[in-house]
Amino acid sequence: MDIAPLRDAVSGSVLSAEDQGWDAARVSHAGLGRPDIIVRVGSVDDVSEAVRFTAAGRHEVVVRAGGHSAWCTLDNGVLIDLTALDTVEIVADPEGGALVRIGGGARWGDVARALAEHGLGISSGDTASVGVGGLTLGGGIGWMVRAWGLAADQLVGAQLVTAEGEVVEVTDASHPDLLWGLRGGGGNFGVVTRFDFRAHDLPGVVLAQLGVSGDARRILAALRDTLATAPRELTVTYMDVPAMDPSAPAGASIMAVWAGTDEAALRAAIAPLLALEGVVENDLGVREYPEILLDHPLPPPDQQMPGFIGGNTLVPSLDDDIIDSLVAFRESAPASVLFLRSLGGAFGDVPQEATPFPARNATWFAMAGAFDIPGLVDDAERARLAAEWEAIEARGAGVYGNFSTTTDPAFAHRMYSAESMAELAAIKAKWDPRNLFSRNHNVVPAV
Image 1 (cartoon, one colour):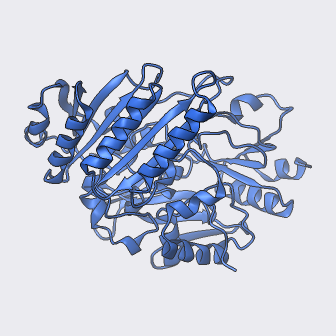
Image 2 (image 1 turned 90 degrees about the vertical axis):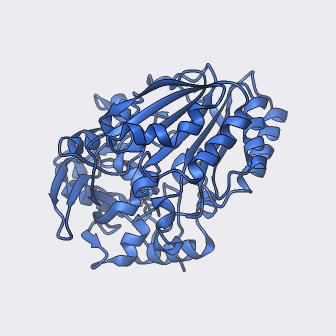
Image 3 (image 1 turned 30 degrees about the vertical axis):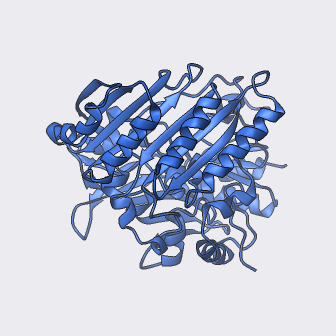
């Protein structure tokens, strides 16, 4: 691959395996990737040049925004790294309030800190190091999902570089079909170099951290019943992790976040939980929103991610049978994790057809999986765990692509309804008929 013309055309840098800084440039949270080259763009024009170069050479293109990725590393092809496009600009919204224009390479922690200075917030994920781009294009479930909906629900515009290398401004007025696709349809239609969001007033949040012990089935049933009538300002998570997981203390815990600074309101909303035997209040108080976002640093370059047997599902009703199945899965595999997050509220207000994101009738997001560690898990155990998870997932109404552990192209058909997939395929045929942007949860262009 002759990259000299590309180096001459861009203001950023173009790296190959022979260049200094190569290893640092190809590391991600999944480990060391193995792209053919990396284009660290310095401008939107650089993105256009990189896309044209890739298309002309019929190379594969991989787009990296914040630096997270699928559970496995993304190898081969031209990696377009948007990290330098990380601006955060607040402007007046003609309809009142504030709009936030965020570069495609920005990360949520930086965005949250910039907005907090103005008493504003956007419904993002729960991790500071996650990129705005990947999270939003996949939908974006986070701490404000019940108060404000998905990150994608607040998206009102975007700047996108097409498969032809052209720069287009996308709004409901200019390209309503394309904006619909960007609200949860993944990176199938181009490289988004700027996201425009409608912001919300957020003077702070109230955070409660609860320790949990005893019968998980009883705790989860109480959590479900509490959230069924809770104000939409409240979002909660339940997490049970093994001692081997470095990202969180071992054991079960509940985190509750209130959108606003009314500590008494949060305490009243979770009173049924605090009254349970086995639930202990470890911390409760007002925080700035950026403070509650987790921060996972990049792993050592030589660290390999273990396999993961499981998945996620969007559950309309967290009934006792599903609770039993989820807890039984966790109990049967010591090296496994169970995670749930409450939905409903503003998430459910959005009509199903308004975005590609599935299962707007879901009231809970559930994820479970066992770490596939050599010597600990054999083929029979893998088959058992996979079968148990498939039975659980089948009871849900859809899956969330941002929490998937696969890059199998067929997975996209599990993410979207048949109607949404058909509409996404038609948009894909219009904007990327050659399927240049295929290294994602791929939507194949309609014929």
